[in-house]
Length: 237
Image (tube, rainbow, N blue to C red; front, side, top):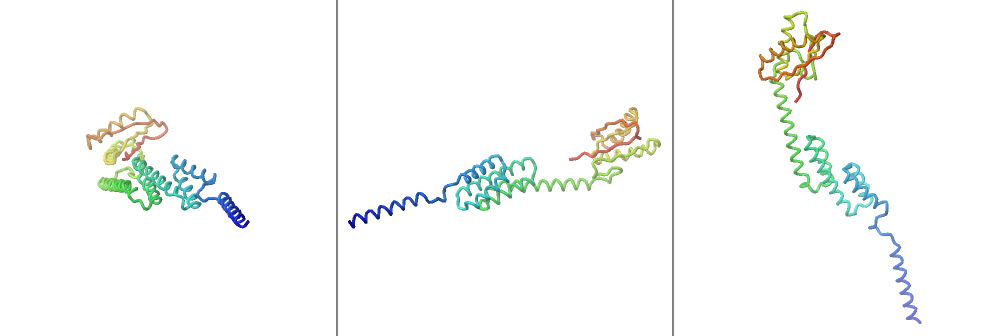
């Protein structure tokens, strides 16, 4: 009976071991909630909701730091940020491109080659912006002082001295100088329609004398209860 009892006890112990193994939870299997979280992360990346995707990835990394999918989605998210950086840079938004690039770098700090090309393009764009700003500053410094307009304002209104023809002619000389030097469009605001052609002709002759190639843009508005005035609008780059 002893051999039989030993075999019986061994069989019973093996059965209990199998039962324990089958009932023990496994770390590698996702719960339904985790599986849904990974799907939501993938959807966020596909929908370009990158900030949301980054938050989701951080939460999943905290739950399963050793899961191989963490690195996989880190790279996908970094590549999505990199693509966004390229797109906004093409649109001329250098700051947004730099922000997206910094997020790509933070996600994949060990892959500098991933961001090298865009980084160079952003550096070139910033250099171009700086050169453009310096050129504009030099151009502004090279201009003569304004006679009547405020060069920093979107527009300047000048009341015309229509009751003193000599004074008004001197005004028009100064207006013509500012129009040419600061590339201004002109809007005459007059109480009578007949006043507009006369004023446009007087100003046009002065502008042409200063710069025959200047494309003068003049228009007028009727303001019957208002003395004649002129609005000077510097053209923006």
